[in-house]
Length: 95
Ligand SMILES: [Cu+2]
Image (cartoon, rainbow, N blue to C red; front, side):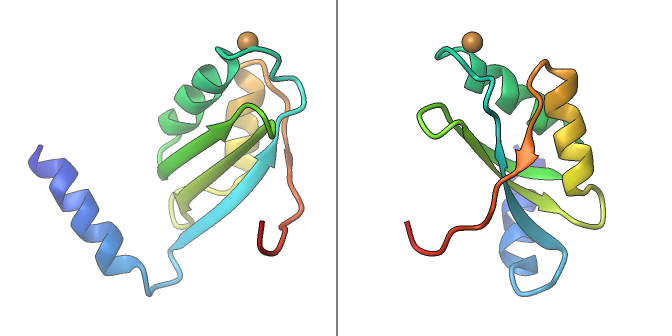
């Protein structure tokens, strides 16, 4: 629990630094409601992933990560190893 609180504090504290990055991955092969859970689990296992939100309807995963510990390629590799090939989605402005 203390670790979690520390992480939250760290997240807040580092918000202004360049260490925190977010990316959106497109996962075209997600085909049922269970897939996002598998993908999320795989992404959260990557050292450096701070948060992962997987949207089944959009077939997209939004990942917040520490760019000193991991990178987009490692995240893509993690989804691939879980059985879901992914590509970095083009950043959209607004909604
Ligand atoms: Cu599935």
